[in-house]
Figure 1 (spheres, one colour):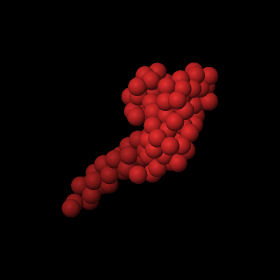
Figure 2 (cartoon, rainbow, N blue to C red; figure 1 turned 30 degrees about the horizontal axis):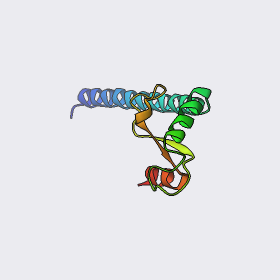
Figure 3 (tube, one colour; figure 1 turned 120 degrees about the vertical axis):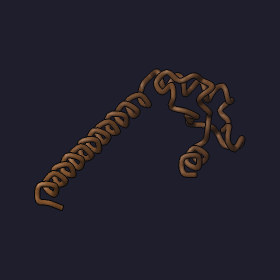
Figure 4 (cartoon, rainbow, N blue to C red; figure 1 turned 45 degrees about the horizontal axis):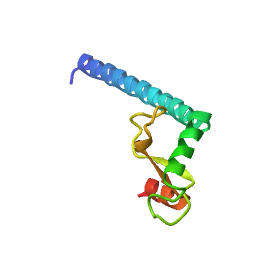
Length: 103
């Protein structure tokens, strides 16, 4: 490789690395913003009301194990996050909700 070609390659590689670093930083910022919005929404009166309706619909029984008391609502999808439809949520107990998210 000639010195000029090597310099060109190094510059291109530097540009690519910088672009990738910027994308990674933006993704991290986006993830942090999403996480913050998620936490704020989950503490909102709007979510509390919907969660309570989902629990009531299931008669406060976990829809996964059908044994334990349901205390949380699990999202089947986040497609309509912050404007969920009730059918996208399931009433679950703590144990089943943890199992859902770890398997």
